[in-house]
Amino acid sequence: MTIVNPSAVAQQIKNSPSFHLIVGTYTSGKSEGIYVYRFDSKTGKLEHTFTAKGVENPSFVVLSPDGQYLYAVNEVSGEKEGSVSAFRFNRETGALEFINKQASGGGDPAYLTVDQKGENLFVGNYTGGNLSVLPVQKDGSLGAAIQTIQHAGSSVNKERQEKAHVHSTVLGPEEKHLFVGDLGTDKVNIYEYHPESNQPLKPAATPFIAVEPGTGPRHLIFDELGDYAYLVQELTAEVSVFRHENGKLSHVQTVPMTEPDFKGAVSAAEVKISPDGKFLYASNRGDANEIVIYKIGPEKGTLTLVDRQSTLGKTPRNFTIDPTGRFLLVAHQNSDNVIVFARDIETGKLSPTGEEIEVGKPVYLKMVPVE
Image (tube, rainbow, N blue to C red):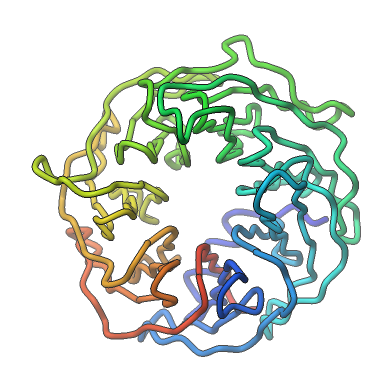
């Protein structure tokens, strides 16, 4: 695979007026698989261009660094082993062509990451409570797992934390470490990454950082410089800030996502940073159904609440900010739609545009420039 020049990608984004929006879904309802739309970054309008039919529960997708291949989990529910499907992606038309499928190593695969050389794919299995490393072949296909690591343990929430539940597999700065959020054990496990090895992951010198019992680590994101990491806690709807240094995380701050007097159910889902690095956004499902906006402190990385925006739908599991920073799009699992919000680049606040599309159970959004 080609190693991508980041500055060239940034220039392409700057020059591109349109992007492909790839929508991952659950296929238990109206959805037929993976949907692709053309997104106009000047108007915020969406136009359907392609559907990859027959893909079972592609609830999380990721692109190869060169944008030529797409990988989607097949989130099979229950204890059965899930899988990951590989596709060729036509950057001009948005069409997807199936290549092959490999077992994920555990039940309910929920997260994917590909390294920047396009050599290995990391998959986190929620019900399986484990993670696997799948090699990427030269033709973009996936090989059988070369390593599977099983987590063990539990925490205080007897319904949700009865066992390990891996929810994210995130490569850190310079890809020296893999950070694995485990909702079931209230830990972020940390592994050294040695891509040249046939067993590329091994526990780091500090193998994990524990969070408050019952909070449920879900998704983790680093700022552009890799100095700070932001972790969304699903079970308590909080965002935690960590200072990062050479594979070690140290807690800086935890902020609530809900209002002080909020009494309803909460279920934090996703966290993203704006392209300019000034704002952080997090989605909250349950009864809140909102995006919470924070300003990121320029020196210490701490968060200050800016606003809460109703997402105008049910269960905003995932969202994406378009690469120009002008729009934020929210996928609603339980109202079968994707809604487009305009984003004020100066204040970080959101406002509805009136643009939306109907999609069955959309749960993941990914954007890539049109070639």
